[in-house]
Image 1: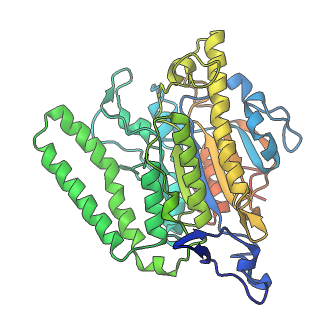
Image 2: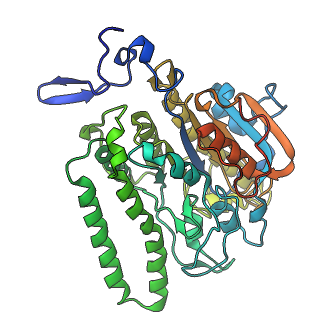
Length: 445
């Protein structure tokens, strides 16, 4: 096999069909079997859980390597040596009078969003994932991938005086540019498929389709009332980012990229499932597929919009909607439902980690070469407290992270210190990110 390696584009063929092979050791000679130092490219993902967690059940016991996972984190037990769990981090910019929106939109930016009920939205920064995408995004057909489950909410939350658009975005390519999320697994697959196997003028067709959508929206806007125009403008502000991504996907740099896994149309999902749990699992599969094929190395995912009252009654013991249960007011029944919902979220996170760990590449696996973050912008949903945020980071970033630790920092240490370290480990270092003061101690190997 060292003399006759199998092509990475090889497929099993027969009877008019073909089936892609996963990564095999035989696909590379022994002396040239890896991308860099025996490892694959580093990937970065951030998964956002709305409405906080049971704060009394989150924090592990012990510090450093001698820690024990909390009861909420039991789904992550088999990944204990792959984890970094930081305690006492927060975004100081999110300490305002708002309950939710400032916390979510500032999660990856470490900034304070502009309070508005209209279209003049601004996070006053750029999200950490997009800092990485600006520097490394041209290495793959898709600079980054933004995914979600529920459509962008429109209108104004009169309780706090913020546009609901803020509750649907964690990825910002600029202060006024929240990135549009894809919520249909079938559409995600088609984007991955087209990016990895371009069909002539597919990028041109995508642009023509986008132009038609935008023209249609602009024509409709002229016939709308004032309040509906605001909603349409909120929608268009999220769609704007697609133009740049389509342009970059068809750039000359793409021609030097080679897919690490060939995708086949037979694997295309049917569409948006009616069942929420199935929908989430399909999105986990899409993230794994995107990383395994190296179509993108940067992804964000939202389990739901912030303030979501998604029903979790498919979980035995849960008796209401998520947001309602997060406002538990110490009621035992609500606290138990809240706990079960938290565990379910971490089970989905563990599902993704398991898939990535099972994807071999060279002498490693995709999880070892990744950083997969899961967390929330508030700690306890009843208090709306942005201090001591619930966060987990899994994966070794190709050996650049010192995993297997519970790291306890001084109270109210900047969350941006962690993002600074993540950018360093991803290979896109910056001197400072938002209000960072230093690299988060103990994170980098």
